[in-house]
Length: 333
Image 1 (tube, rainbow, N blue to C red):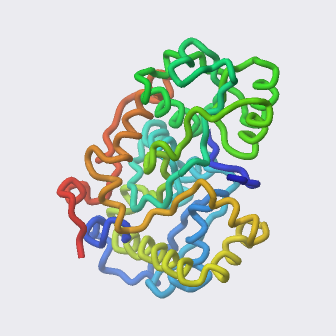
Image 2: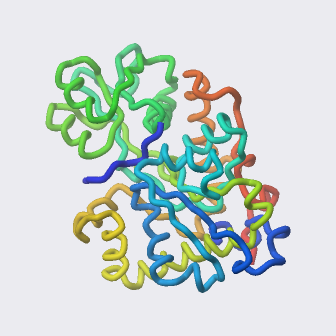
C-alpha cells in the first residue's frame, strides 16, 4: 500500500438502529442544539464522512455536523479528551488511552474499516521466523498502533512483548536503523516499509493475517450519547448512506475524498490498498463476545499494561453502545 499522507499517529447505524443507545436525546429538534463536532485525521477510512457532508446526508438527517480535520490521530484524541469535540475517529489504542488518561468513556458507534495488509512487521534476513524474534531488538513508534500489530504477531507464536527488546523511534528513522543493523525488525507501513524491503528485509507478519483486528472506529463520548443518542444514530446512518453512494458512484465520490486529502484521484485510490471498509451488516460479528475486535483489544491491553501505558484493564463491552443488545447478538430494525 502506498500512503503519502500521515497515518494513524499518537501516540449503522452500524449495529442497526436498536444497537444505538436512544432515549434521553430524542425530544428536541436538532436546530435547537449545538452542532455535532467530530474530529477526523488523515486516514481514508474517515473520508466517507466528507462525502456525507458534501452530498447533504447529514442535513437530510436533520443534523448540523462540523468535521474538525486534524493532522494526526493523537491530536484528535486530545481534542476528544478535552471536550473540544463530541466524537472522533479512533483506533483501539486511542480508545484505551482516552478512557485511561481522561476518565471519559468512548463509545464505539461503528467499525468503519480494518487494515488488511497495510501494516507490516519487517525482519532482517537473519530472523528465520516470528519465533526467532525472541530477545531481538524490534523498532516501534511509541504511542501508535505499532504496539497492537506487534502484540498480535507475537501472540500468534506464543510470545509476548516482554520476549523482545523494544526500540522506540519515529517511523521515518526506521529505514536507517534497519540498514545499519541497529534493529532486527520493525513495525511500519508504506512508504517506510518499502525502504526496509529494499534494504533486504522481508515481511514476516501483516495485518491481513488478523482480519478485523486492526480497526478504525467512530466513537462518541458516553455522556454525549446519553443526551443525544438519536443524533448519533443519524450521524452513523449518514456515514453508511455515503458508503452506498461511494459504491454506486465511485468516480464522483473518489473525487470528493481526494480533494479532502489534497491529492489526485489516482493517489487516493492507491491509499485504499491494504484497507477494507466494513459494512453495517458486519458490525455485530466483529463486535460480538469472542469476536475479532475483542481478541485484538485483549492482546493490545496485555501489551500496553506490560509497558505501563495503561493503569487498568477494561472490557470491550465497556466501550459499546447498547451493550446488552450486542451481547444478545442480534441486529435491531
